[in-house]
Image (cartoon, rainbow, N blue to C red; front, side, top):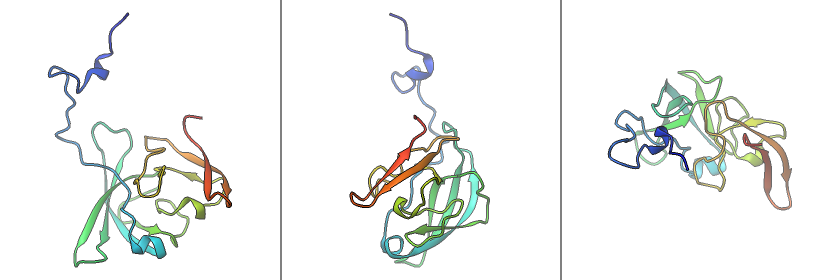
Length: 153
């Protein structure tokens, strides 16, 4: 029989509610556009912040908008080694470096990655927690798939 743990009851009833007022926002990868599909786009890390209710730190990254004269601010999961003022590159032709976002097919086997998309364009779903990472095990060129060793084993 037993009871639910109180931390699990958050959001279930009016008594135990999750305090979401101070949360910073949804943490996602950039939406895929022409610049990412065919080249790369550069962004600068403005600050690394703590998001309540999340173990991993969050990086606030600013990109130039490719279609209008403005800047877009995205929240990404901060990887170990990121710092404020660092330039990060997102796209197919980005180099393999700490913080850069590139497709899995261009990452060599044995590389440690985080915030991996399950399907193209879902903006990150695997290995997003604090200290979580996945390892690229192998590439299957015929099927166009990549095998990962996930944190769960």
